[in-house]
Length: 313
Image (cartoon, rainbow, N blue to C red; front, side, top):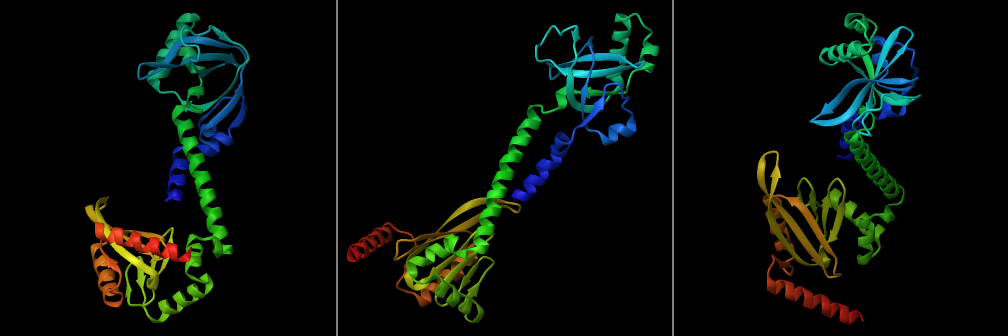
């Protein structure tokens, strides 16, 4: 799941291009071939002149178009409107990092027309020396991209923690919650060995996530493995809740198990069929369990656990 989120965010956010942005000279003409290779560019310009045109998004001012005449060509830059209106007439020696965007005709035509009027030049002649690509500073690390990058960083941290934890569990199973829980019932290694033998030889019932043997109830899922020694069980009950799935709204059952050590296990996402089958087998083999939820059962279990605690004291 986390891996899928990371892949989606990396696809939607040009992380690699941010890191590997290319430094190019302001005198370089950006053609189609270069534009395919360079998504983000870093350019050190000479003096930039305000074109008189601005960029609006949703009625909000986001940038000003500036130009630079160099080497017989006209280069445009869309600079963030950090100071709002009015835009500075000139900008001296800027270092600009931005996305390389192609001009749409509906943007370039009025831009060159306005500029031609301001500098007393023929609009057609001016357009012929204008680059059809411009460097868009407003598209580099804008609010949307920053949010995506922050989310990506958080997901990456979570994945790193998850993989480190998984690796530690693999090299040292004693760190797992399952192993630590079994310490309440005896030697965990002997119990695990017994569980393995029972699963190989004496499975009474097996569903997608549950395995029942004469002495253990085992839950296997993507992120947890619960091993419950049945002779230690005191109370077992369930509750149902509606859950949205691809197939629509469905009832999902949760099994709660309380042991004589006071440990509580919660087995989620079960079907009615699984719960009924487990109850039937356990009711036959362990009729001394408290089955089902009731106020009386809750009070009785609390009393039994309290008395057992006093006996140990």
